[in-house]
Each structure stands twice: as C-alpha cells, then as structure tokens.
Image 1 (cartoon, rainbow, N blue to C red):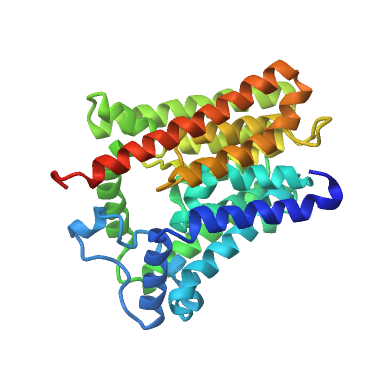
Image 2 (tube, rainbow, N blue to C red):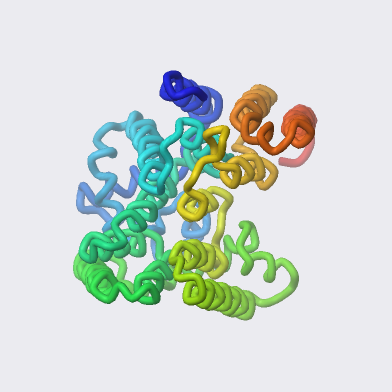
Length: 380
C-alpha cells in the first residue's frame, strides 16, 4: 500500500470485512451486552438467576456489574446498537494499533484481517476495547495515574488480565501499581454496594462458567481437561505454567533491561492461566507483537504481524465463512502479505502465496461439503 492510497486501501479492507463477514451474521455477544445495558438502565438485574443453566448458555450476561453501564447509551439505539458498537470496535482497533506504534496502512489492515479480529467483530466482543486498553497502558506506562487507571479498567472488565498489575509491579512502577490496586478495589466495592449479585456469588458464577466452557475453548486448562485431568488440577497446572513464563520473562528483562519482553510475557501468561480462551482472545497478543517488533521492514510492513494474521486463519476461520468469505480472505491476505514475503525471497513469496490460496480452496471445499451435509436429512 502506497502512502497516498493507504487510507483508501485500509477503508476498502474494512468495507470488505464489514460487508462479507459482519453484516450477514447475528452478533451474539453485543446483544447480551445491550440487554444488560437496557436492564441496568431500567433498574433491573442483568444477571441470570443463581444456579441457572442459562449461565452456561452463552447468552447470559456474566461480566462485572459496572461494565453493563457502558452499554446503556447503546441500548437506546435499539437494533442499531449492535452495529454502532462494532463500528466503534473497528475504530478502537485502529487506535490501539496506532498507540502500539503502527503508522502504516498495511499494518492496520493486517490487524483487521486477522481471523481472531474478524471473529471478535462478528460476535461483538469486548476484545477490541481491551486491545485499546492494553495498547494505551503501554503508551502511558510512565504516567503513573493514567497507567494505574487504565490497568484497573482493563482488569475489572476481564479478570484474567490481572497479571498486567504484576507488570507494573515488576517494572518498579510503584505509584501506578498502587493507583491500579486502589482503583480496582474501589470498583469492586462500588459494585458490591449496588449490584444485585455480590462479589462472592459473581466469582462462583465465573467458576461454573469456567468448568463448562474450558473444554470447548483453546486454553491450556481446557486441553488438560480434555486429556483426562480434573478441572482443579488442570487449572493449577496452567497457573504454574503461566507463573513460570512470567518469571522467565522477568529474568530476561533483568538481563537485557528491555521491558517489552515482560510486557509481552505478562499478556501471554494471562492467556495461559485463563481457563476460558476463545479464538478471538488472541487479538490481545497483537499489542505486544507490535511493541516488540515496532520497526517496519523495507516493504513498509511488519513480518511478525504478517505471520500472525495468516496463521490466525489456520487456527480458526471467521464464523460461517462460505466460499465468498474464504475467497475474499485469501485474496486480501495475499495482497497484504506478498510485499513482505517478496523481500524475503521470491521462492518464499510464491510458496506462501500458494499456501494461502490452497487454504482458501480447501476451506471453501470444506464449507460446501459441510453445507451439503447440513442440508441432508438427519439428526440436528
């Protein structure tokens, strides 16, 4: 992408993602948030009844109570609230990439084209907002009050990101870590006062959800549970592995004096320790990926991000991607990746392009086959 046409090319990529992958699908997560926003806006309880099977249904509000208030204004928009939130999420993606050091249209486009990004937009998840928070935390790391408040907001919204507080502690940002600790405490205390569900009951709800969803996701805990271990043992093994990763990155930082390693390791450790990891959570790794490898190469791109974006489509493809979806993804990824790969050698570029196109053809064929099977008579 040339600089003069970079903005137009990025807009074209965003438009393609919007029309091909987002508009045709229901947006389950944001619909849950909007219902919760409407509930608290009218003084109602946004949570399912304690012990209800609805907790594990995927259609229940299971986030901290105060988060729901952020969706009250969007709930006033009715059926347009979901699309408004997804549009704001796209803006958050661009802003987050900018805060993490991106300046090139190709880099922004690669962030948008990662399969985990698209999946999160399709669902209307919080991940783009969390990505923005993590990137802002890095940018404001030497502003104690700002860093502490941002860290507190991120941790409160998603408790598995609590290790970012350790990053502040281990990098000796005492004031920022103290501000974060106080702010999180205040948020939970406020929620305890006004929420219809106490903190203990809420944490119990998360435990039930973790036991149910861990085996279905990509977490280390889920992998161990599916291998035959009990949930408790699997959870502790994952936490120990995360702690080991964190210690290794801390020792590396002490040796190199480069805190970027610990920043990346902290977020990786958070994902390793979490019992629930869906594919769209992987977007959060883009923040440290941009921070660690900030300088674009001769093609004006960042090779690690190219690898991440292409590899993400092998981890999971966007929901309900038919032949058109796979074709669009294959073409756009090829266009975005080709200049980077060509600088590494024409042979590598050809092989990588062939790999992406083969992925497109194979996935398209699989989608057609799956559609044929689902159209056949048989059990639901």
